[in-house]
Image 1 (cartoon, helix red, strand yellow):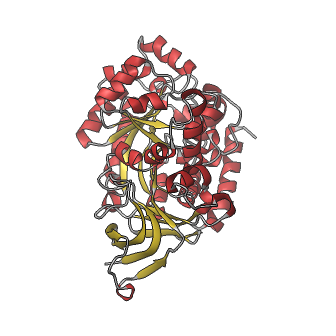
Image 2 (cartoon, one colour):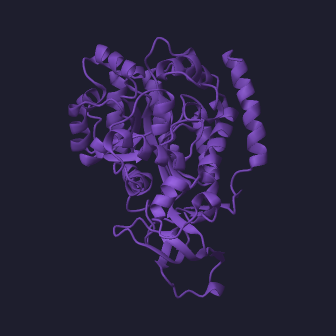
Image 3 (cartoon, helix red, strand yellow):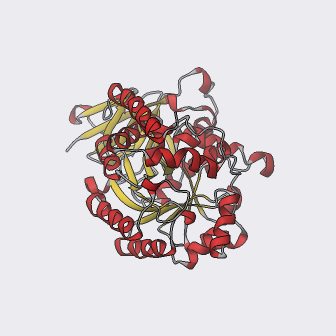
Length: 446
């Protein structure tokens, strides 16, 4: 039974009472055994003691929309809008992936996520080689819901990404049966139809049935771009969310990325059906897609969490950046008190946990919950003075990913004193460069 004692840290619990105090946190195996201002624990009786005076402990971030398969494409899709970005860059590069490039793309992204305090992700892969992304997820220690992307429709889709409906479904089920529940549930499967434009009605109806049968999440994109919405309306006669509801997919197992251009009926459906929205402000701004009406969704008690999306539409996977943007972009329209630091930090932690159906397991620091947390060193020029400053405001508005010192997932130290313990940077970075060179040549994009 492995034990870790974190001593004398500022602990931001995100529990129901919002408790913040200086104290200790005891981890036993994969869970929080005790937490309080002054625990009666003999340091000699635990396996590891982390002296955390002048450090801040927070729940690990939960990012609900990530594309690990795209991390290699960082800098390869700049200054394009969504559909051009997909057709000219992302789809050709995804079609060029091989087993090795998927593996190192995933490790590259996970390394960045862990370094910036993210402990759980909802990940969407590409059509092929998803097993190798799962291998990277398994070895890295990150908590993840992931799945192969599903695309059985689309004339402009590169041939290697074109699927037959039956094969897409079968490959997804095969991956689910292999990986769902791996390592005591640290890894879960999520069916991942790309978006309505690239999926037949038959596929989406089968995904609905399989999601219900296996009780797993469905992760897809919706209402990210006005051109996308026009295509969906022309093909189905309905807007995105109305169509998904028509197919029976709108329920508490559905995670919708973006949801920028929703009308009142779609917001009503999302609220009434318990659908979860993943807000991706960095990606939405860079692709010029728009600004989601997040304050309105929160007023309707819609479940809204945060995600960085992929490296080629954001250029980093940093939750500190997403929190700051999520707060700031709303203030010019809705006023300075809109999307305050507490609201945004909740979206990044317990809100993400709610989206993945794990709010009783992660998202806050409480006895019995999984030991998923980050330790921050906020003793620096950009975070001072600290006197009489709200700790959560300090984290959201001043802190950066460089302030993350240690990351613990499932009770396992995956980064300590900014040194990765589960991913070898000296191997991954050169392999990432070799992989993208190979993909660019294969896709004829150099």
